[in-house]
View (tube, chains in turn purple, brown):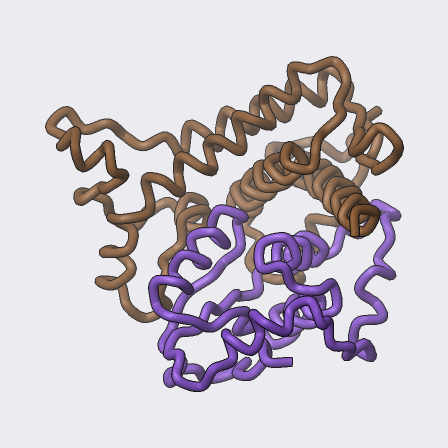
Amino acid sequence: MTTPVATGVARGTYAAVDVEERTDTSEQGSTALLSAPDIPWNLVVWNDPVNLMSYVSFVFQSYFGYSEAKANKLMLEVHRKGRSIVAHGAKEQVEQHAVAMHGYGLWATVEKASSAGTGKGGARG
Amino acid sequence: MAKAFKYGLKGITGHLEPAERELLRGLIDDVVSMLEPREAADQDPLAALVGLDLDVQAPTDRALLRLLPNVMKDDDAGSLEFRQLTERSLRESKIGALRAAAMGLDRKELTLTQDEARLWSMALNDIRLVLAERLDIRDEADADHVHAMQDWSQAEDVESYLALVYNFTTWLQESLVQSMMASMDRRT
């Protein structure tokens, strides 16, 4: 991902994210559902040098309804580790998310939860 | 000169000069023409109606493949099967966002609703993805190299021109996303 160099727009929006680990109560329900251990598929979002960090965070907030803190945390994980599991669910459900991500221009794939290599557990935070 | 998008009393507003609007229209037309599905003469009308495309293959053009990526990393057959079911409607939704942005460019005042802003951000993102492929941006170092091109007097060949256009659309999208974020904050 990238941040524009000479635009002068606020970059501080995501600067404070690392230390921010607050739990947003508004998403408790969906998180509990998505974190259930018997659900077998992951939605993975991959890093690329084009998508704006702010845009990726915006997509995570507006599409999944994640808090700003959680969206930024996942976005930074994509940026630093190259990929992040941003949602879990039944296969049809994560496939639907993948198409939505492709609609937004994010590079997303689905995979069986058991085949997850790196980046695992990122979405549980 | 274009003005960055901002969020204020009138909502999300921006300002683009006629030449900048013309530039964006051209870019939108280019991406739309890449995305428009070819209509085969022997196409099954029922399959088309429900969005199926059984003849579809993964795009060979890198830019198009980036817009319409495989859904599975190491499963080409599974990805192709999924593509048959979904690619047509994905193309159509992307074209829809691009056309919505083009219609916005025809208006004198560039004032966007939240939903229009979302469609604009998707359209600008797809434009940037295509430009980035043409500019061969493969990693962060390539991106930094392109970002360094900020002076229009440097536009001396196609590549430097494309880099400047890429940076302009990046700047525009970033200000739009910041405005959308501000508008989301205000509503909650």
